[in-house]
Amino acid sequence: MEPVASDANIPSERLPEIKTPEPSPNAFSWEKRVVNRKPRIILAASGSVAAIKFGVLADSLSDWAEVRAVATKPSLHFIDRKGLPTSVKLYTDEDEWSSWSRIGDNVLHIELRKWADAMLIAPLSANTLAKIAGGLCDNLLTCIVRAWDFSKPMFVAPAMNTFMWTSPFTLRHLTAIEDLGVTVIPPISKKLACGDTGNGAMAEPATIDSAMRLSVLSDPIIQSLPAPPRTI
Image (tube, rainbow, N blue to C red; front, top):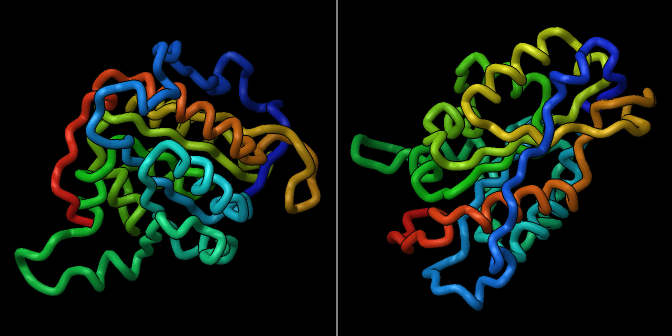
C-alpha cells in the first residue's frame, strides 16, 4: 500500500510538473468535429490505497472517452468492481493467461496496446514505478507498458508514502520514465492512509481528468483517428 509526505530530499526543480498543451478551440466539443470515434484510454491501477478512487476516475474519463480498465492483483484489494461504469471492462492478470491457449490466439497486452490511443496509470505505486523504470514486465499492466508505442501519450499519477516519494530511488525512476515521454501528474500533500501527513497522495481525480482532457482532446492525431475493427 502506498500513500506519501515532504519534498525534502527531492530538489524542487526536479519535481515533475503537469505539462498540458493549449486546448484546441473545439477540445471539449466532440459533436462539433468530424471524427469517427472517441479517444480510447487504458486506465490502469497498481497497488496503492488510492485505488479506492479508481471507479471515480473511470466514471470521469468515460464521459469523453472509451475506457478499458487494467488492475494489478494488489490493487484489487482497494477497487470496488461494482463501482465501475458498466461501459468499462476490467482486465486482470488472470485474463492475460485465460485468453490464450494456443499459437495464433490474441495476446491480451498486445491487443490492448493496439486498441488504445493513450494510457493512464492511477494510482502508480512505488513498486510499479520501479518496474516500469527498469523495463520489467511481470503482470498485465507492466507488459502493456513494455510493449507501448511511446508516440502515444502515457500519464502516471504516483501515490506512495512520503518517505518513498522523497527516496533517491524515486527521483531516478521518475527521470527514467520522463525520458520516455511519460507525463507525471504529481502527488499532493495531505494526511495519508498510514497516518503520516505529507506529500505523496495521488492527485485528485478531477485534476487527473482535466490533465488528460487537455492533452488528449487537443492532440490533432487523436482527433482524426479512424475506427479500426474492435478486437477486445
